[in-house]
Image (tube, rainbow, N blue to C red; front, side, top):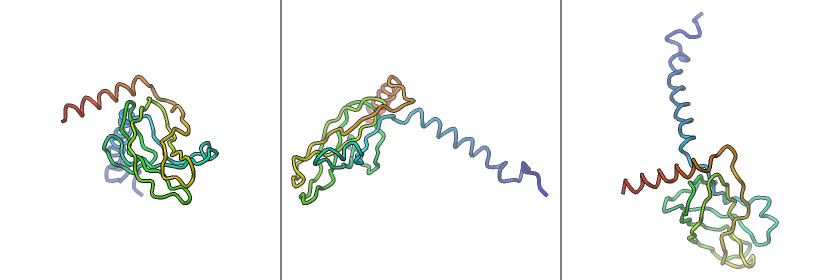
Length: 153
């Protein structure tokens, strides 16, 4: 029978790889933005008449269908599409300027004048503060990211 921590054992060889992977994941937590845009319709917005879920198509020209979407604090340009209401025509996409506060989750929705209307406005159906988040640290990360983007261009 072989010893569990023999040099040829897979567990022994995998330990450094696992340690590096864990280190990278933990360091990413310190740099990832800690605000969030969520277009899924929440229970609180279901009671609001003519309110529908949305999908954030792009943030500042960065296209992604990730929902919810993590985002840094500050002023952002969002391209959003709304779910169709019963009988509504194609709603298309709209661009909005949106101010994101640090450490905040926003539940976004489309508010229509009527279920049949193709016109809609982006509304914050609900928002909540994310725990374990330091707003000053989030602003510092956002400033550093903006500086690196300006430097790269």
